[in-house]
Length: 364
Image (tube, rainbow, N blue to C red):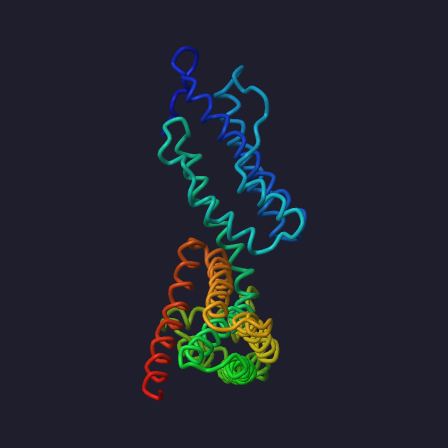
């Protein structure tokens, strides 16, 4: 497919030039993000990120050629991309990769006639490359991060609901404060213990599915013409023909790409589950950090509607923050996830407030 001809001379408009300059600035800023990320990585990740920066350089050259003498003074990229470049230089975290994934997915080139089809295709592929790199980080974070986010949200929502429900029932400040602290300690201990049991149980199930450590040593002594190694691969999902062929390769010593028993996939699964103790500690600490927030107004002497309103506002800000973080890491809209967290949290608090009013009225 031939590339579209570049508009020159009188065919270009002032709006075209402004748009091209903006694209040029954004390409330079995105290349800086990838270079900064590459500088903080090593091995294959570094090579991949450097290749992405080089590709953004090719796009930059396209807009330079298109602008010609109209390139003007260098412009700054979008604020979002400049912030990402700074974060990449200082931290190089999975958060930056997740945000870059969203940036690549929102590329306008597919709908712009002045961008070549190959540039639009590049941006789509860049999004998938960054998604793959971000998924590695998500995999490492998933166990502990899941416990942390769930713990913080449970602490925020459950203790806010508890405090609002008790307040609506007409309890005084000291009783509400005592209830909040009791809810914090009970919930944090329960969350920590539950997370430890959950993660340990999941790891034990995976370990029970792992190949026996002595299985590899038996391969060398198998009968070449009649052996059961093919049954191992059939039991793991291969077709009969694939299993027979793969077993023959292993016996012949031709397949050196992976262990005969397939332990590589199990290592990845263990990494995704996380460590039981670290998940329990994270869950305990983050539940407590979330649960203390609605208690703060009562600790500082407020009571009644003033305390309830301030507790709700503090919890609302925290819910928006945790929801946005989840949205960033999942590659989804941070705003949508933040609003969802807020709606769920305030919905639970509203229900307990109504129940508190009912119980308070009935006991009066």
